[in-house]
Length: 237
Length: 204
Image (cartoon, rainbow over all chains, first blue to last red; front, side, top):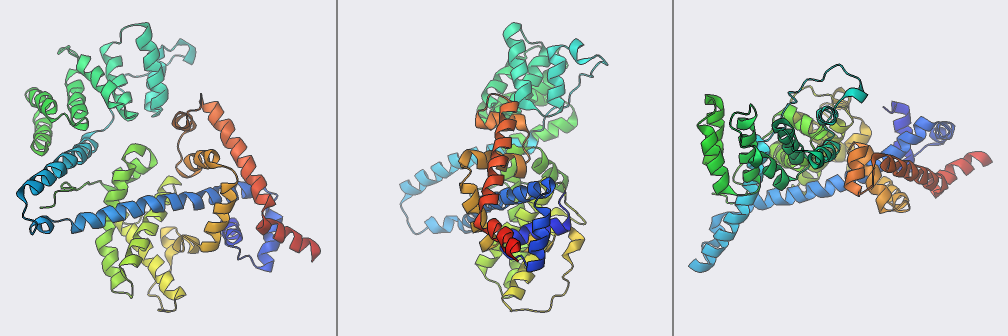
């Protein structure tokens, strides 16, 4: 972390506000690598803040729009067909937004249930190495490994399940959905979890009918708490 | 009934911090949530202290940026809630603006160090600084700016940066970052602002 004096010098340098004394200090510090790194980092931060500001301005504009959008605006128009079409368009747009939010509300990655044996790296299987990457949230690398395993042999239930979660983490919902859909063995200890994620995949894909079918079926075989959670989702779909 | 955004996104404080530190894909939802959370309180505060609607927008955005950066840099000193923190930062930012415009000189409490922020956080955007940095960074090209933004500001892991930018592997991304920083250093050292200081002291 940059010390207070360095931060002060850097900020005043960038703002072109260094006093004579500060210029002497700045010149003395400029040979120090850590000082130069801090200066570079601050410059990148200055630029990045601008980018973030633009994003927040967009959010602010949406927020304002949201507050002013009311059905009253459409009342005087009085053209029934136009209103129906407009509401239809808003409904479909709204479904997309809400389903993504619903997915975000309920999606969390699944913890690694495979404990690592105390073997050296060389003795670990590719799946074990992949789960280390999964634990470290290195999902793109974990995805590559799963693809390698998949190209060599059929994935086990556990591998397929974590491959699915990994794909969700890298926003590849379609392929993730295919993994969970393939897990049809009801005796598998991960079956219910796979169905849960399959339901969420359909939610994210805006396939409301299929999401309802999967989650309704799952509701019949899970505990009370999960039943309530599913009920809440179904009510919102 | 409001047809758009019917459902309110909601995150706990720990979820907000955890998402901003690790789960990139939910960041926008968190930012939207934070905006909605602090908007009523900061609006009330600024409008009742000589501000207008544009001031409100500006201060909300800047206060969220300060919070965002503190989280990313693991420097957040959270004594109360996340929205309470952003509100306090916004309040200090507004006091600072009033003081600069000489609309108010006496502050009820100016000790913002207790929440781990300093005078430069309070005045987040400074015209000289913004234009100087923009000019210098434009000289290192867009690709370099992107890699440095992702690595330094967003704290994205190098393997993910490689993937995001289509580099073959993590090492190539690392090399790119190294070259970009080297270029940036040269650009800084060649800048008029830097040269003026060096020369000024040489001739004194």
